[in-house]
Length: 415
Image 1: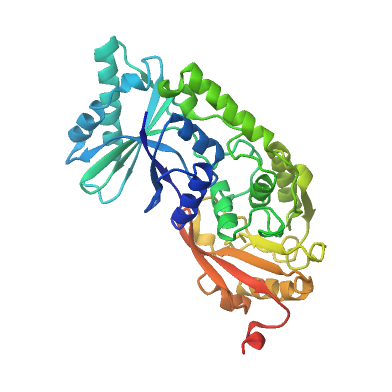
Image 2: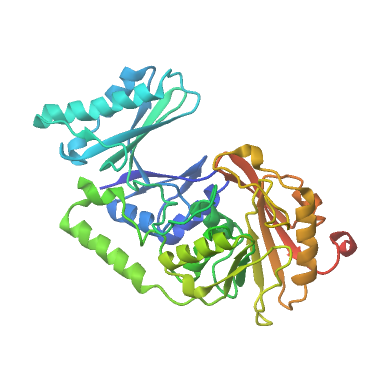
């Protein structure tokens, strides 16, 4: 059973996702496209991608695509799919819609017409209609309406893949796990002494970067602690596929090992450090992360073996929040609020100065990676970046900057 698959991801992550898919499915023919990657797969590969991939938002199966002009065309498009191969009337469904340059006046009405097509077809076949469940549907459908063509997908993931199953404690506007994984992938950090070395996040918040890194270092599959929509769908219900799914999970469990590198996380807010520690416990990696409270502008570099390099990785708050209790009191950002995505410029200058004092004495060196929407960040830090990677944090266009930390200023090093 060949299934046309599309794995959407954050803009700027497409090539990294294509590489990840090939690590999971080495023989796959993967095509990077705008906003994700496409490939043909089978039910076993759908299960493997959901379990093993850190970067995509979902694993979608395209079930229909074609031209349209109005909502009735979408009804006919959906009605042409044999839904009895996917669900029974006892299952539930939900339709979500996205659009780009679509002529439709109402995406809600478009979703309603797709839902009607599914329900009408099953009623004609069985005499019963499935019901709608907007929170936990058995069959999540996604409709994408372009300028002239529409595509309809079955979402085999259900909840988005950034929900790994361990986060319960979070602060305001937490970094998504998929973006943290993309930052680590862009940095080439693989959790080994040769690929990134030790890792330290001195602005850890609720711990997303450190926990994602620790799971990579311990070989923990990102989907091992959650459920997926495909587990309730008919194409995955045979005893053979259920056995394959159990073998995939058992194999993933057997691969878990101790981290070969130390991982450190700290934050100026002790409340957030407590959140991060509890999240790490649920994620199964608390034993391999050293948590501390403290100001990023003052915390000494972790002590490492001479031959082990270190990686600093931070997603500093873009809001006007730096210190607590007089150190740079900051207002907490609200999720989705883009107006607070700016920071006093002296914080970054002071941070860079601290890094040059504290992180340049180690023989194997430290490399810093900073995610920021500020295109002038290197100037504010008085550092010369060695690389900048375009990356979107939701609707916010960012850059992931790499700084190679050495003593003295960047200008002094320039021949």
